[in-house]
Length: 207
Ligand SMILES: N[C@@H](CCC(=O)N[C@@H](CS)C(=O)NCC(=O)O)C(=O)O
Image (cartoon, rainbow, N blue to C red):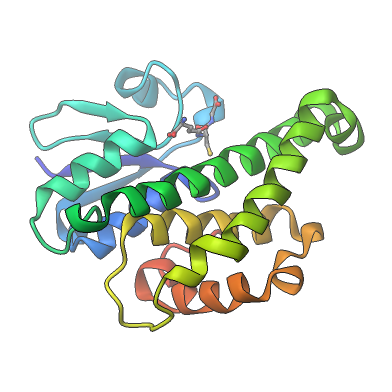
């Protein structure tokens, strides 16, 4: 059996997994199963009782849920290229943590706005904390994380590049009013090199 990924087109978490699969050269081993996680899809719930995407069915039909364990598994499937190089593991995981924090704060903002209205969601205590976190993470990335990376297009990506790259594009897609590319020029230049890669281009957000 091939690997089977449960996903939807607007999930930043699922896109991170897809970019990783493409960068690892796993395209031909992966089936994409498009589902609506908000519709209590029975097939998804069977694989993930938490009813969230992404969820992965492995070749032996073991299911793995949650983005980071799925990424860890995909990285193990082929030796090269490795997304988690041992020699720079702490630095890569530092960036992964910041990027996942940005995804979580943005996605939770989008969902809160959808279900309670933008004004109420953003004025709430949790809403203010989320928006403040987004600002702090963007500043941190601009100041000390992204400048450490190479800006060349053909560099081998590591997991931090993928998570941060998708997080920034999700912010542009769902929260354009933040205008981060205008306010954080180093990040914007870095992101341009990432978005031009096939793995990012072929997994663009739609919807
Ligand atoms: N912690 C999870 C978050 C995944 C997540 O929240 N996925 C969203 C789509 S972007 C979802 O499926 N939501 C459906 C729900 O919350 O019921 C991960 O890292 O994979």
